[in-house]
Image 1 (tube, one colour):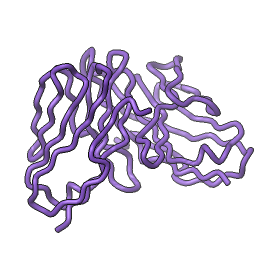
Image 2: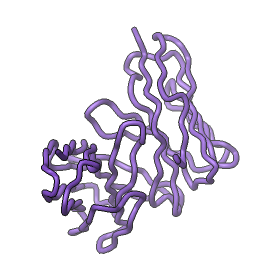
Image 3: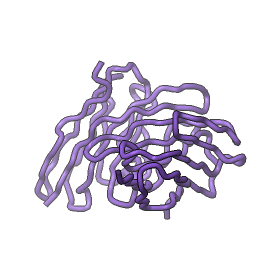
Length: 115
Length: 111
């Protein structure tokens, strides 16, 4: 049981290049999330997917696209990378404990630098 | 503007001391979570509180959710070097389906 896995772990891009960050979970969770973490800002939600086939914008969606490929996989794409997208990206998945409680599990992160 | 504020931002204490960190908001949340994050890793969930006034204990850690479900505190008794890390609170929205995170409290416990 690997939990949440992310690839790659590190990436350096030049401005204008594109790339896709991959995320997979093996816990059979319905909900999946993409966050970015910047110093002093905590984690900010980029996109989330409440279930297979649905995606919704979070707090900072501009410059990103997502695909919920199936229940296990949720990818994040940068079409034209900008230096402002230099960050650590985390994928998470969750399942409802109750109507009001969701427990999130995070992957190890992808450290992206855009030059 | 942060929807969730955490204080203090940084805290450095000696092993054996007690400490409390705070998470505050003007918004009401359906649930409140606390995470600990170590360098180079993703956050790990410590606790979820869902009822106003709820208190949960996890060994030396005590978590409290405010009566109005707008704030929370984390108290650590007799801190140990292994408690060192970034402590993040997260408020659940949309019936807990997505979350907003605070900026974190970076704790350093010196031996």
